[in-house]
Image (cartoon, rainbow, N blue to C red; front, side, top):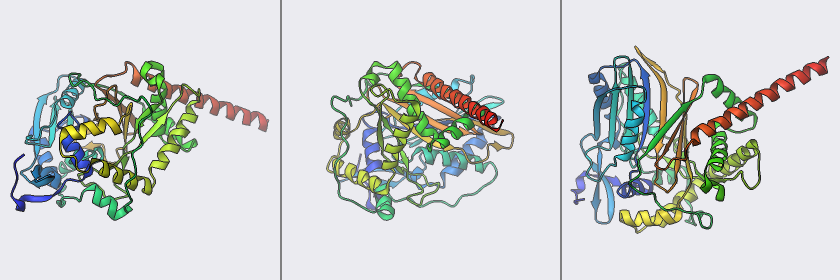
Length: 429
């Protein structure tokens, strides 16, 4: 990258932004959401809405350049690519999403956000594919909402370029001396996958009744749907994969830091790192014990001190490294997991926009690129939970088996509830 004029420089990239920028040169590290609608707008209205929403965010008006040994954001024209494609069928979005995951951003890319609209007469799918150095999945959800708001004439006040997550954490959570990153278990494979393999996407959506029951059931155990999904995928993977049976399942769980950093809908990367380790094979633990184990481990990662220490440690480890090759070599040594689980929670905005209604969001879809890595994204729209499984080396049947486990647990819970009611009635006599 050529050196740039100093007056164009906005700020240096933070630790996470720099990591994604350099790692993306080694393997595709973008992420995407796919929103599916009944009804549609004209291609022109979509294009205008995306452009209007894009004017709000300074992160969509930057490029990355080299200044001495530092990577910096510099001013640039709007960095959004838009294309409209005739929608073939209800599965077309899945194949286009796979293509997007297989298509890397390059340092010379003219856009850091690619938007694809699949459109027929009565349905459409909007695919948002972001370079991860400028945004996280929560950003993408808010950006989607902003696009839809423009159809109602909403106008936005532009945001200044946000500070890096490093500075925001230091400002709101404090600082701490670097220690050491948790090392993977002995003999844990952290090798990156063969780059010739292609992404595969599968999706399943629970009914509103199933989603509500799952939520109520997990709350009774002091847990969340996310904890239950971690347990279900652990059990499913250890039933289906020889590799997962040999060692505890290492699950990467991104932590949304927006509320802690006093952020709302700004476009930036604001995610903490947490890894938990679950195992069902050795202890023969029941489902709810695995859920409790997941919750206990994750709760400790959510402490402000843990977030600060983790961020300082990562910054210290990568300090002085300047190339994509150096970043990749270190990442193979200190990271490594079987499952990446990311949960956007519920879509808490309107689902109807004129003649158009949102009925599903698939994703987030993302992959760091480790050998055998599986990803599951959680998103609830109109009370229905969608689970999206992405992998370049998928465990066959993993998503279906995990959902079978969740449904089985729900069935047992209902039986127990009915039995308790009957027992209570007998006691009242």
